[in-house]
Length: 154
Image 1 (cartoon, one colour):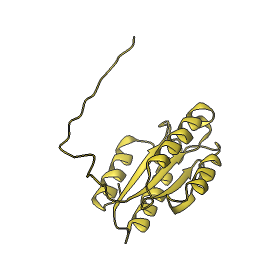
Image 2 (cartoon, rainbow, N blue to C red):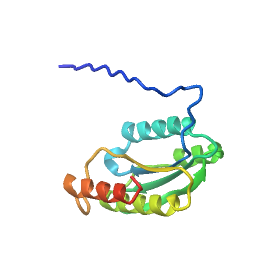
Image 3 (cartoon, one colour):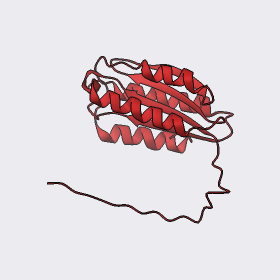
Image 4 (cartoon, rainbow, N blue to C red):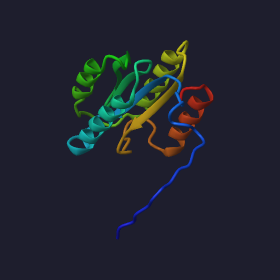
């Protein structure tokens, strides 16, 4: 069975005059073994497309998690697209799925990098939703997202 959906949006914004605030984007990426192959290829392709949309006042950070979470790329100005693309290309699959730790590192980085940033800070999660290390229930992750949102970094 196949379902199709069509969405339409209407806005009072004038695209000729609209200028969005600079974006501080933290990408939190599941690089666990279950993401190898096509899933991680799709994540890389998505990040390249995000990079194409970023302007010179925007910045991007990348947090990776498998067995452990770490900052793969510190906040980097989007005007350095070649360097960012190289970091995206260097993402490789390995390990278990410590999503709780990955989100903790991502939200912490968002708080630190957003402090003093004149714009909007957002965290973007890329995962196949198969956490198997640390918290694994959706209530824990929703609580983390609510807490980060209240702190201004979601």
